[in-house]
Amino acid sequence: MPEQLLFEKSKPGRKGYTLPKLDVKEQPLDVLIPQEFLRRQAAALPEISESEVVRHFVRLSTMNYHIDKGFYPLGSCTMKYNPKVNEVAAGMTSFRDLHPLQPERTVQGALELMYNLGEYLKEICGMSAITLQPAAGAHGELTGILLIRAYHMKQGRRRTKILAPDSAHGTNPASATIAGYKTVSVKSNAHGTVDIEDLKKNLDDDVAALMLTNPNTLGIFEKDIFRISTLVHDVGALLYMDGANLNALIGIVRPGDIGFDCMHLNLHKTFSTPHGGGGPGSGPVAVNDRLAPFLPVPIVEKKEIFFGMNWDRPDSIGKIHSFTGNFSMMVRAYTYIRTHGAEGLRANSENAIINANYLLSKLNNVFEVPYREPTMHEFVLSADRQKERGANAMHIAKRLLDYGFHAPTTYFPLIVHEALMIEPTETETKETLDAFADALIKIDEEITEHPDVVVSAPHSTPVGKLDDALAARQVNVRYKE
Image (cartoon, rainbow, N blue to C red):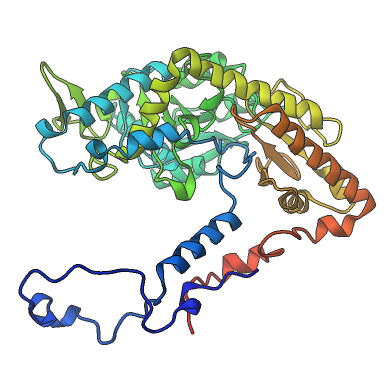
């Protein structure tokens, strides 16, 4: 049944609250608040009982798809299950009720947690310094590129270009542009990895850095990484790693050990903190000694008998977010790391790789696989065969909703036609993966037998097929009677 808005359920005089008796002397509002800030008329708020409010939001929660409800095979987004122990830790009053302006001596536990989290992340990445300040992955990217710019400026070099593969996340060129650079695309080869000859052609003294995702957005490890690192460093440029796919590497490969100078981490991807609307996000940036002096202030440091924040960093790029970052996300990530330990974190990466390869083995004869290189934690299929029979990648994604699954990433990376980008993560069971594969195989059969059913999907969701283009162009989220 369609769910009415709270405004539509509202009835004058109904309420779901009881206010305490006023225990201070009552004064006219215009004495307490300047006249120019007072409303001319009462706010149009719904009047509704508590039970109806609760039922309304429970019904909405069952309509909405979320990680506690089902499988999210979103390639490159790592929609990982969020362990509830993380929420318990983040909800502890000793963390939850802190204020960022408290004196350092009163928040020693929080500072110790941030310091230790930074040490763990440095060890995982093979880097020597870190900032926890960035608020998301793209924010971390921008911070990393600003660090690289500061490094070159300190060397007296004004470079103008950032290189990025044609399979890169869209935030890579966006971050480079915001930081004042021109982005130059590097081609992929027949194996889906960086074309070394095209990289050589684009490397010169104007290049500040190469932004590289490893494993890349096809789920393929850049096996020429040592050669790439040498070529980049030979022209005085730096190597930046987009850490979106670190979920495949923990305990197996440390980016700093294979030539990267700088990288961002997505705590909401690799370390299980809430993703998207359940955030906020967190995108720490880890660097080697070259870039350490330029990290944002403040840096949490361990002193003789206490933990404190160091603001005295003359080469710092300054603050890039309020205070020290999104602290509750740090508590969740710290809990996740401590719960698993080194062996558990490596096992998670291994399981993510196993799950992806198992799922690919069940689908590689039904869908086209454009790159046949060994895959890691995610893989990309093409729905070109299905499109020839009348249903494209978007139609397949919409039809999956009728089978109770969230759709995978579609039409990315751009180098794959009709792309379906799938990442199962490490926590999904064999039964879940089998059911997901069976649904895709059934949809493939439907395209031949009942194509209209697929093209007009979804049929079982609270709303039917939406006009995505119209919704993007004419956003309207305001209620009017």
